[in-house]
Structures are given as structure tokens and as C-alpha cells.
Image 1 (cartoon, rainbow, N blue to C red):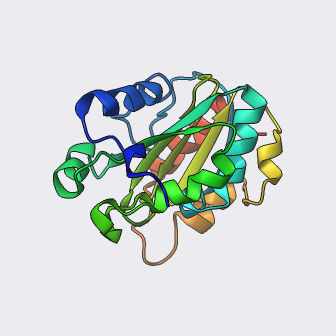
Image 2 (cartoon, rainbow, N blue to C red):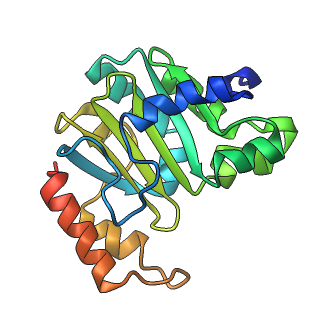
Length: 204
């Protein structure tokens, strides 16, 4: 079972985890805007749900191994950290050792604060950021778009064959964001997203 202390309960501890993310992403932006502070990198896309499931631990393991990270940090931005703190007694954030993240990631995202399953990241998170301690890569995932983006300064990394299906931007927009039960993206949203991916996230 994941140690509950992995989830910070005080402002100072949460700020330490959040600091890793604020160096990598702009926590106030949402797609189709470009949330990454790395101005240009190599973007790879998968479905949102895959980024908060167990197999994504292997993707993170390959990312930290390739970039020499000692750890990787995760923060949920929506619902707000303040919401989680009020309702579950802890912040929706954690830092995991790079050496064992493949084994610990799933337990961390499914941890139920106060034994309440609605407080687990896998169940509740709508917007999630992940970043390595090196600052060389980050992940941005939004449930409303059903998309997760891995942005790295490296291309064609081992993480692309770690057991998670990465797809082209066209496939992501067609298959993930356009099912009948979703509100279709506007032409402007699609255009902005495509432009950002093609000019700032050189597709691998």
C-alpha cells in the first residue's frame, strides 16, 4: 500500500512538489494553449486515461532513465489542490523515486485518501501534470480533451514502446476528442492545437 505521507498534507510540502511542475508547465493554461515551458520539444500523444493507469509507470521509467532523473513529480490541477485538501485532508501531488517509478506509480495514482475512492487521482483528476527532476521532459493530460502529451527534448525514446499506444495528432483529434458523448472541438480549438503541436512539439 502506498504510504499516505507520499501525499503532502501541509502547504510547505505541497509547494516543494508543485515547484517541480511550475518549472516545467504553466499550471494556469489549458489546451489548446501550449502548457509547456520547454519552448520546443518532441511531442508524443496518447489517450488521457492511459497516463493515469498502471502501464504508464513503464513510460515514466523510460523517461527518467533516458534523462537521468532522480525522481518524477505529479500534481493534479483540476479539481484544484485546495479542493482536495479540504475534502480529503491532503494535496493531490506526489514525488516518486526514479529508480522504482515503474512499480510505484500505479499505487500512487490509486491511493485513496481517508479510504475514499473519490479522492484518488485515477478516479477524480481532470488535469494532470508530470515532470522529471531534470526539467528535460514533462507530461500534460486533460480529461476533457481525452489527450495526454509527453514532451521531451529527446526524440524516439524507449518510452514509445513501453506498452502504451502513442498515436498521431490527427488520430488523437479524431478518435479521442470527437466521440458522440463529447462536445466537439471548435475549428479554432483544433487549429490552435495542431499549430502548437506542429511548430512547438516536433512530432516524433
